[in-house]
Image (cartoon, rainbow, N blue to C red; front, side, top):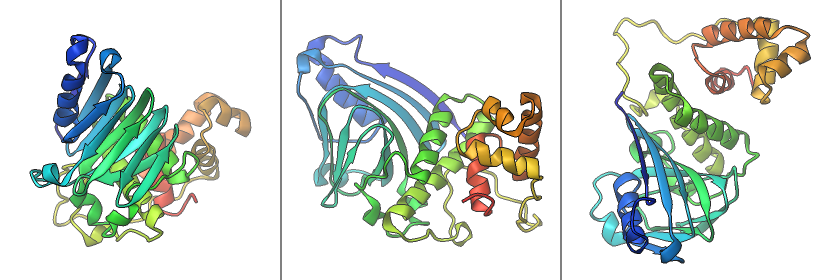
Length: 292
């Protein structure tokens, strides 16, 4: 998978040109829009840090009050439909599409697509994580994707919580092997969020060719998928506490064990699940029915 990291800011641009420069940045690194309004052009500032991981883009955006619109004229010029997911980190915002409005506060999640008009509104300074990925991969699993746009998944929602933590980890982590695996986790969590919104389970992954990262195809004689080896009682206890957000120290206190012992159990359950991080472990354990 190809990886790219860019960091761009308006800080070096003359105040009179920042609005136009920011519009160019948004179009070049996020999604093309043809209307970007700011309330205080003379005091405007913006910052984008982006990691491109194959087909998945993860951006952290920090800026001030503004409104962005995508109109049919720009949509007609676009070659590929994208799914965008906004994860609010600071401040508030609104996503409007398909006659619905998602109002976001920190921790909330909403998705929208680039094939129909939308509006993003930020009434004050804000910070967001934005995920962008090909819509084809999501639609293959959630055909009614348009029913999930501009709907808020609140901060406390389990799938939104998993996606938020996975996106943060993916943005911060620098191990290329682990980020490749985590990119797929993020993609499937986006599918899960869309399915939760429309209250309809996604199609089975095996029924389509959707991929979120470019991985090598399995060999023709690869063995069929088997459920992972069963966890030991201690590994199950560690996994359950990790899923609740406990740190290694807190897990050790709960189990009356040392931190080194907890790490040993973690390595064991990671090996059995075939994962490399806590978020992946929780996601995989839910998938095979070991966690609810």
